[in-house]
Length: 102
Image 1 (cartoon, rainbow, N blue to C red):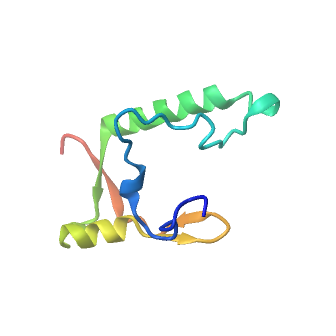
Image 2: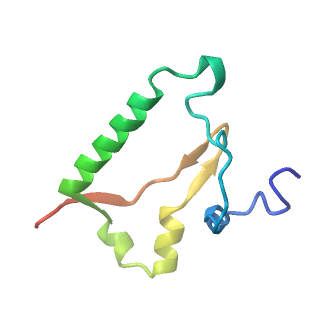
């Protein structure tokens, strides 16, 4: 099996880089690659980083009070729940934006 014997198991630690590991350049290709690569790729990437940075300067992302009251293991399970279909879809995200400085 290309992805390994445990490919169907949810094991996010498999994606933690080990020292010296170099990810394949085309491991994730949301903008495609080659001669038909999206001409807006750099703009979209820079723009999304800017938006995220501006958002995180003013807000903190925190779990909802209901989730925050749960044990850490249950919080992790709830926040990393996803569904497999044609694409992987996250479940209900129990996070809220909390204004910084309050």
